[in-house]
Amino acid sequence: MSDSDYGRARGATCPLHPDDLAQRTCTRCGNFMCDTCSERGTQSHCPPCRAREGLGRDFPLDRDNWSFSRLFDVCLDAFKREWVMLSVGALLVFAASFGGNLLSQMFSFIGAATDSVVAMVMTTVVGIALTWVIQGAVTLGFLRMAMDVLQGQRADLARVFSQFSKLGTYLLTMLLTFALVLPLVLVGLGIMVAIFVAGAGISLAELNSLSEFDGAMRGVSPGLIGLMVLVSAVLYLGPGMWLMLPLVLVQPALADQENPTALETMRLAYAHAKGFRLSIFGVLALGGFILLLGVILCCLPALPAMGFFQLLLAGLYLAISRGGRQERFG
Image (cartoon, rainbow, N blue to C red; front, top):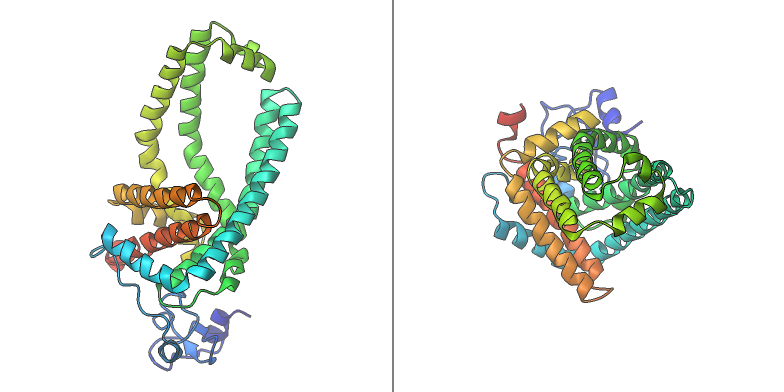
């Protein structure tokens, strides 16, 4: 029986809010907590325990008062306090990502060995799905730990492995994301294939094998390649960017919810992103620059940079998912 069921099954009430039913128990002292005390499930300790240990202060930003500079300052303060454990967590995410990508590359290699474009695409899709499984749960756990840190708690590496129960919902959400983006991808690929076939003067039947495709690519003029790149940029930096930017919030939304569903998570991601797409892009650009700088400085700095990037993403989600929440979703 879960902590949530424990409180509800007995009709227990919260000692600090007697009018509210208990939804879970404090992991430190065992006292009942309502949703208010646990801050919608984001705190595992009750308010008195958090006060005793100096944990769990409220996240200071919301949709109405956030800015790039304030978000950066809040995340930097939290990072300075817990940078070692955040770096270790980033290492775990990197290891999961490396393992998933290695597996995906193996499947792509198998597909390429068949000398068939269809087989290569199918094995690539299978490899990507397996990468989702390996990387997904660890990434969700790291985001959960990052949210805890931003809300004043200590970084607990056990939280990195706390989200495996959401793996089914995560996979379903990723499939919905894929289904949402697929029409745009197919349209873009269709346009580029049409340009390629017309410009190269070949038929689709001649592209059945990888060797024939490679040979055709070598004969393509730079102007034709430039046209294909231009079409891709117009398509994906226009409607594609508008459609896909809210999907950045899907993983933080899953990590933030106690019992998420795929459809509700997608709805929340787009609702939170409304009016904030440019801000999301800006935070991604800032985090990407920091991550790139860590990679350029070589090896070890990349882990703290990755940890800070995830902290920025978690902080962005916490900020734009709070403030006016009742008016928008109530």
